[in-house]
Amino acid sequence: LVALGGPPAVAKMRPIISTDIIYDTYSLLSDTVATAAEKAKLQQVIADVKKQLPLNDARKFVDEQMKHVPPEAWKMWSEAQIQMVQLKALASDVATQAYEPLNAAAISVINAFEKELPAYEGLIPKSVGNLALFVVFMGAVLYVLLKVALFVLRITLAIFCFTCCCGCCRRGGKKQTKETKKTKTAAKAKAATTEKDKAATKAAAKKVK
Image 1 (spheres, helix red, strand yellow):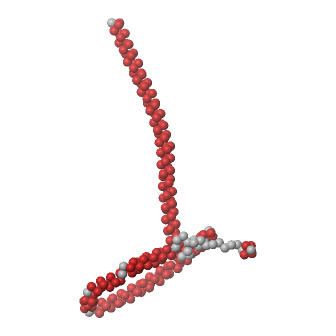
Image 2 (cartoon, helix red, strand yellow; image 1 turned 180 degrees about the horizontal axis):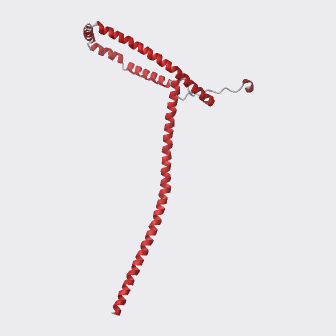
Image 3 (cartoon, one colour; image 1 turned 90 degrees about the vertical axis):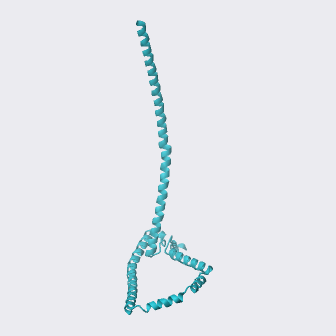
């Protein structure tokens, strides 16, 4: 049956990390804030504060001041708003045009990766954002692993230097101490012999006199 059915399908790997984590985190934070605001009755508090503030008087004052604005200023304001909308549309078009080739290049890179390592197919979702996030994530992981490896290497070298180098230094110090003691003893013996010879010479000289 296996032979007739062909080779078993290789299960795709689940992505380690994807841009869904950003959207899910945003949704989680939004829901948390909304729930907290609902429990704290924030809308009711804001409504009560608005009732206490003289907003109607402020609006009347602003409306009175706006009447003194010349029509040319309103015309310039309208043109500025139109230009702003046009700039936003242009920026959106440029971003779309730039995103499409980048996304195509990212998909080609992911396809090449899956072709070289078929066992890891599906590890990186096929989009430029997911590829960039995966690269940043793997860079962070490699950085942490490198720091841990360097820390372990430093500890190992410190233990090695403490056990080997310090032991050799201590042994060498003991040898030097023994040699120094022998040298001092020999010097003292020689000095004592010299003093005895001098004393004997003086005694002989007195007898001769």
